[in-house]
Length: 327
Image 1 (spheres, rainbow, N blue to C red):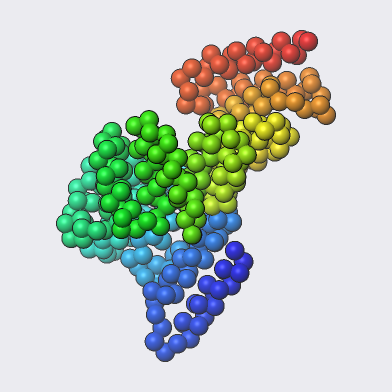
Image 2: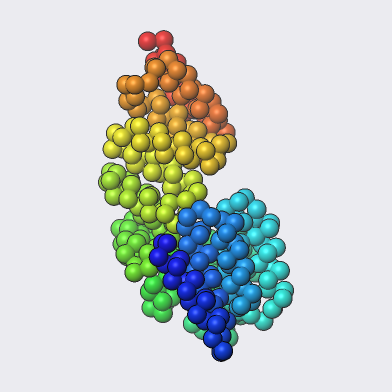
C-alpha cells in the first residue's frame, strides 16, 4: 500500500506540473489516496483526500459516496444524507451525484420510492448506467422482488464484471431465495477480482464458509474484510468466532477485545465475549474471575442483540456460568 501511495502522489505531481493539467487524472489519484487511507483506518485523512478529489472533479460521485459512507460508519446517517444532498444541490443535473445520493438512501434505507423513480429517470437518459441499475436492483430486493433484482444485476455484470458491489447484491438476493450455492459462487468470484472485493463481500463469504464449518477459510475472508474496513465490528466478531471454531481461544479473545475497544457498548460483542469465556479453554486464567467476567458480559448484552429469543438464551448461559462458579 505504501508503494501504491507513492505512485499516486507521483501522478499528482507530474500531472499538476504539466501545461495542460488534467483535473480528472488528479481527481482519480486523490480519490485513490483516500481509498488507501480508509483501508488503513485513517478516516479523517481519507475524507480530506476525497474532498480534494472533488475540488478537481465536483461530480465525482464515488468520492461523495465514500465520504458519506464514512459518516454512516461514524453513526451519522443524517449527516451522510445531508452531505450527498448538498453536493447534488450544487450540480442538480449530474447523474453521478444523483446516483450518489440514491446510494446513500439505499444504505440508510431511506426514501426508496425516490430511489426507484430517480433511477428509472436516469436509465431513460443512459440505459446502461451501472450505478442506477444497481440502486434500482437494491430497491427491488428490499421489496422482496429478488428475481427481478437478480435479472437487473446480471445485466449489470454483463456490462461491468469487475464491480464487487454487483456480486454482493446478487448474493443477498440469492440467500433470500435460499440459493446458498449460487450466493457462494458469486461471492467467490468477487473475492478473486483483480482489484479485490469490498469488506461486505469478504465478510459475507466468510460467514458462508463458517456456516459450512470451514473455519480456516472463514478466518481468511474476515481478515480480508478488515483489511478493507479496519473498524468493521461484524468482521471482528465473525473473526473471533472463526478462531473459536479452530479452538484458538486466546486468539479469539484478542479479536473480541479489539472489537470491544472499537465499540465498547456493542451488545453483540459483549454477548460473544461472554460465550467465549463460558465455553473456551483458558488454563492460564483464574476460573472464578473468568466466569464472573462471563456473567458480566452476558448481562451487559441483554436487549442489545437482534435475536428475539436472546433473553432466554442469555439467562440460560448465565445460569451455566453460575453453576461453574459453584463448582
